Picture 1 (tube, rainbow over the protein chains, first blue to last red):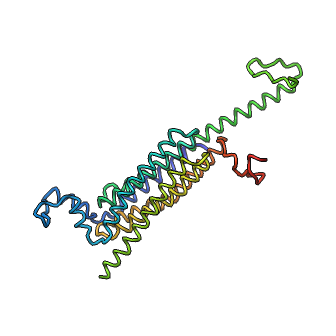
Picture 2 (cartoon, chains in turn orange, cyan; picture 1 turned 180 degrees about the vertical axis):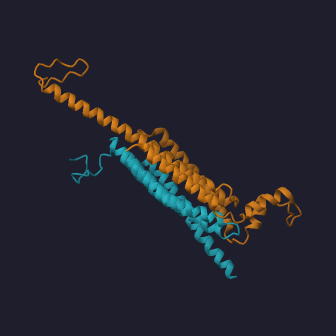
Picture 3 (cartoon, rainbow over the protein chains, first blue to last red; picture 1 turned 135 degrees about the vertical axis):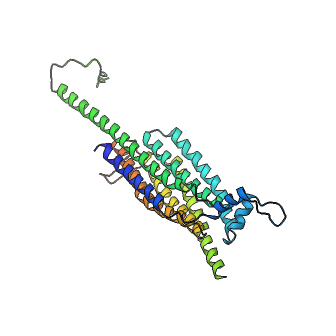
Length: 192
Length: 122
């Protein structure tokens, strides 16, 4: 099966999902968006008389979430874990003996980037980076399919070469007067 | 009061989801370094990453969905979840088939599909 119909299907599905996202109601904004706008226009004074930093204003705006501090801590730990995972995946991309190993590792790298985007969205409380989750997932799926097609095409070439070799051997084994093929390795001597 | 308790429960669920998702993400990354051949690596990478992405998106959905402007995040999370659950296993399956057709080397203890025993011993 050729690669083109599959890739076209993937592209059409991707465009459809992106259109669905754009048509979805963009109802309002998260507290972080409002904080960013406020900080640019008119700084809000805190209890101590100094203007609130963006972090303090964000905590203020999200204060009705009682475990906001715990989730901030989880995000801080999560950044470290995801970066460790990214380093491990890059090690596998560099080491991996076959193309399939590298493709699996790069697929996992895109998954780590998705995790990073989700953590950043939760931490800063803004919606603007969240589209990256969809886009990175779509691109990683298309890349995986394309690389799988490449590996399958190489496998088909190798299988055809093996088949030709077998037919060549059979044809020459049936010939009693055959000359030894100068390009092939000499057969090992069974007595020695 | 009731609203505070509801928010607290939602936040606890979100924190649990985030922790589980991060754990699965790290397990997938460790597995891809530790496993011996391409098929084991696919197994180690695709399953934890699917479940890890599910948990992380659920955490974001639960935590950010309780704020006023959280609707776009909820919608995009659900779309990304549906797409990821269709796309990630499909990609892994196609990649495994391609690697098998390419005769990528197998771990010696792999069960042979015809003999039903370890491939290294038959």
